[in-house]
Image (cartoon, rainbow, N blue to C red; front, side):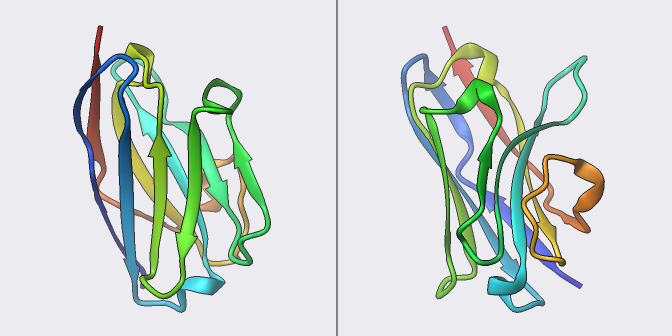
Length: 124
């Protein structure tokens, strides 16, 4: 079992920044691939970013490239999503997810465990 707890969401103005954190427990963190997804009303949960267990494989969805950065800290068993230049369309509930195979897939079905989500609201 892997437990994931997100934090760091909130309300910001357009152009602002937030850093999301996801603390993992229950498995060796460096063996986990970690992903961030987001969900907003009327839209399916979509891929945002992912980092492989090795830390070398990183992916982003096109909409956040150059603005968001995913990183991991093995000492703290935590993955981060630094979000800069936020836009109203980034408003969503953000979820972190763990892939026990260590991958960094775009696909939700590859992830075995999910956090409870944290709300990010960007006002215009």
